[in-house]
Length: 75
Image (cartoon, rainbow, N blue to C red; front, top):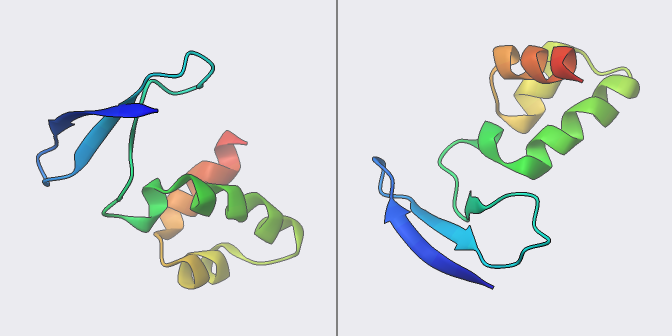
């Protein structure tokens, strides 16, 4: 259950979640950049555990090496 909110600068529709159990109050369905997608960030840690390097991960997921480094250092 969600309702439409405002448009972003890059013409992306943002939605507000009406469910009180949600961890986020707003979200975007169609991201411009792959690094913003939650499922991409959830793939980084298992890939590092399996021995993939930073450049390998960034090439496979089509994101920046800086994004991979930030995600690894954050976790």
